[in-house]
Image (cartoon, rainbow, N blue to C red; front, side, top):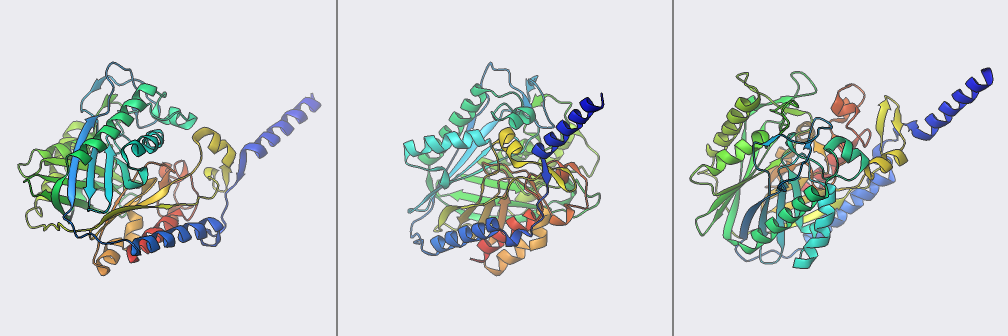
Length: 448
């Protein structure tokens, strides 16, 4: 019996050694990964400095296509594993904008989903060259609804978190995205863009620190075409979680109401929402509303805030528009089990495919728009004072999450060992100091 117990204990120890490692706390700034990413950033900046400025009027087009396949039982993505939806409350779309400055074509594509699926991005990388484009010309995003369609991630981790994989769902999302880009490209007309920023502090809260800091801004790109059509692209920093996990329905949550309310205004023909700096930020109701009432009033309030500044926001018609992608070199994954223990990287790679991604940089006139492969926290923007830094360089700052890869939550580094929340513990897949890692890259690009 003693011998059997010894073998059993030895087996457990070997298994633990194979599966579990220690958190790597090597100062990130001293690592080869950090140095490689900064070099990648410098190379992008050099390329930007060599770009030829346009002399033409900007061309702008837009489109939306449904992403839900008919007659297919599909899971609900958000709040963990959920099986098939019961009803579709809100139609889910792929929305695309095309920008052509006469030299370069750039696109923004957002999906009414929890994240932008990695598998869909990979398929678009193969499809876009058939029409003379590449995925490097597209800034990807999502609205981050926790009541959207799932089934689009074939990895083990994806199937657990986003529902059982569905080829029909993945193909439908891909086709809709591709067709939205094509139609936006084919419907371009002369136009200009302007930037407006306002605040809506009542409708957002810090969801990991009670009463903690929050980035309150609504940021919007006003688009005005010479054919009389107007459109808007907007971001806000609250998770789309007004509906709780008891509602097994498809809904765009408050971003859907936000977009619908914008498009119901006579001055707006088309609207797009991209999830902003949502990590550590949740929706809040100043009047105690819940669920659908909260969605209604939150969407209306955010929309109304934009129109306070809409008419006095000027637009520029001759501007450069270009997208650049800074490849981020990641250390081995660090999915924590305990303060100093993690799941080994090979296990994470088997379950998810591993860590990869870029920081997307969309230069649209005086707007510096960044897309991250993560939930990105607005508290990092506050720490780095990105708005003030941008103003110093005669720019405007904007950031959206979920840019076609996903590496977990990027939050304030000070929280890594001091908080035990879900966002900091289970959903940080990269380890300590990545708030500063991403922040340094963004700061460097703003300063270029």
